[in-house]
Image 1 (spheres, one colour):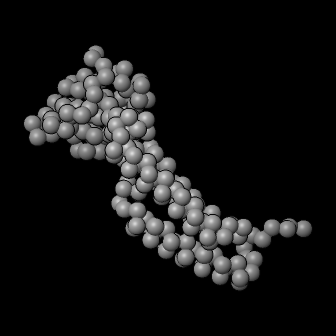
Image 2 (tube, one colour):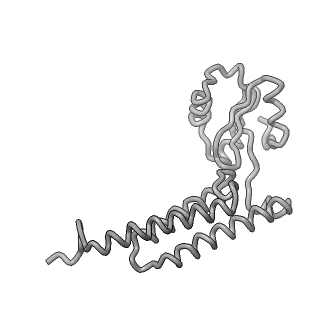
Image 3 (cartoon, one colour):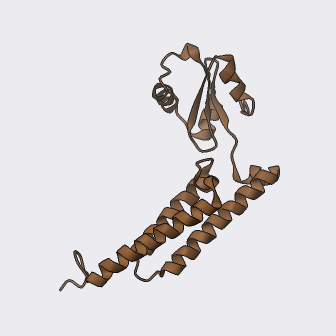
Length: 176
């Protein structure tokens, strides 16, 4: 005999999912609006983890009958508060910022692939080429630099003077 309910449990179960889902979603939206835009930004791995964790909590609260709505709202509040505190500290303390954020790294510069940096960041040449194609930059002669940003995305900088200014905070880790 199969003890698990596969397709339907009870109408109360469906009502609970509907009501808790709506209330948990509304609570999360309100908390995110209070905390500001930075909470869901994609600035670095830490921000990404918080975003994933918020989604995971929302899913757990909606689907797990053993988690009360108030527990989920408390978990949202805790994560959002920690995110706020971390970003507040990192904005005011450079040492703390270094602790939680990585620096952007140069992977390609003026015709040269920086293989030491590529190995350190685990980015193969093919991914750099894919990023160039994605940005519509097929001609390497027009590309000054490719940078892996703090959020893991690849940025392409062309040889124009306006774009070269964007390299001022990128450390060239390896001359090759």
